[in-house]
Image (cartoon, rainbow, N blue to C red; front, side):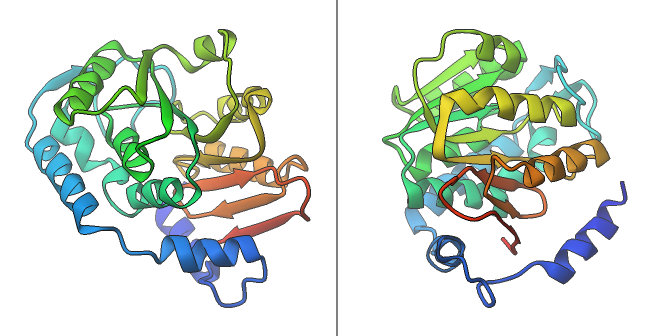
Length: 256
């Protein structure tokens, strides 16, 4: 995949709020994406990423999916942070969606070192957040990160593969699901389908790395065309899906 060419295509057709007729999406742009982030939260973000960017801790990665295109299986925390988009606009997207819609039961597939987990938590500290990480060393590092930031018992980290978690007993419906891991198109579709019974009509699905490779992009397009999902939003790197079966099917390509 030529990611530069894909970005040019995206940039040429991505919209702002003008020309958007969906009230939900217009409000998303006007009241959510454009809302300033408080200085207190910016300070937390800066402290987190400043510490991680200087962290030389080595993690031996167990790869359960497509793996990183840029990093070796043995890599330092600062190397991971250098390629981690949840420290920039996409991290702010997670934060803003949590802050605006106040989902109370949240599931994250792919804790990594905990950056996205913290962005989700800071957006709504009252949410009960379950985060799944298959790699044992990465999971242990994320646990220490949560402890260092004095995160309350609102976050439950689980060392498990995604499939093993889905095959276990799940006793709740999730209001928001963030899938950031594996990077295999067939598996992405499979996870979304298996999660349907654990979600509801207004659950927000956030899918990361939809342009990781052609396989992921094809999977994203398959989900966009699925009649189950009436609202889909393309933010280039991330995609959002919501069933909203009481509304007509719409797809948007938006600037983040």
